[in-house]
Length: 577
Image (cartoon, rainbow, N blue to C red):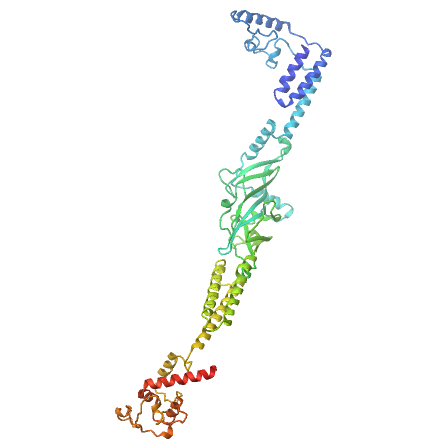
């Protein structure tokens, strides 16, 4: 009975609260069986033994006799009948399997074993957070921290009081910020927008989230959900977050960064890391060296509502990291991350609040362009096309493909210019590619003009290169000009017949009939040139001053035109030959 009593007490006091100690208890029970002869005898209450015996007899008499092979009630109690025993409301601290035994105080060695087992059980719960005790402590910690917690406000008074100790300057809450650049998703320098995949990290201290780990089973960290971006958060956020925005943003941070848990340490330090994208609108620098450029974009972070009196944004360690993953970075991409630098800057106060400055964090990110595709597909091809256009000068003038080759070079240069221009913004700045394209296009047009001029001169048969329209304009501006002033002189008497029939006229202009040519030749033959060529017409005009240019034309317009054309053709052939 002593062994049975000891085992039962161990089972109900140790095994039932925590089944993790089952193996330990079995070892203790085995040890107690070995030590059973040395245990002191336990006193048994005679009155309770008699009550139990009478109660057992009554139950056996009331059992139906028709059941064969039914299980008899145990003689030592147990089963379902003990719930209706006459002692059911007496001494509830005693176990149900030992109703017939009255137990006093536990033996001293048993109390020591129980204390050791409870201590080991507590340590096991503290080490293993999955045990029932750890879960209860974590839940209790969350309930205690969030009780009367307002996520829409922050106790800035405590921060000011802490910063002003010892006569210091009152400062706002320091918000440490860091970015991990994972990769470049897209860069559109025509629209001036960059799409970056980053891990955004913020860290600050909240005095309302401080606890003693010893009071909660050495729990030093807790996690709280934050949704809806920075600021007061959404309806499901559990704690306060600072109001940090990307000032030159194309899309807001709540739309591009994911919601995530924040890790809170026992000293009140809150660390909040979120994956997502940043889409800043950039004022690019370095685009003038396209396609050998390194573009630089500056991202500006700061609080939108709180000045430096409340929040001061500073760097978290170096302020940035790159990669931190085996799958970070770019491959087969036009742009790659070249350099990152972080600068802490402060904007001056507004006149309405002269004591409140505006601290910001500037991220200067530079991107390197892959220039080899442009050299291979654009620059080299443009140079070769220009050389091909220049080679057309080696072809004969009467070759029809000469002008076609030059025109093809011009069209190819224009097409290349359109392709490159589509990758650049329409701006007033001159890029390296724009200068190269302008020079290449100018060269092709010069070659085209030279080829057209050579072909024109080769097939030209006139004597004067002055265009007809130019000559007509010059004569219209001076209608009274004499033939001598225009370089033709006066008509000779004997040379009139060079460009018409034998005509005669006299110098009197009083009658209109005198100006009409006749078949009578009245000019002496001394005035006629002996060489017989068409140039004698100039001598005729120069010797007869009374004959004007208009009058000579009226004599025979067609003959004079033919004479002038022959003279021009002969002069040009002499010069060209």
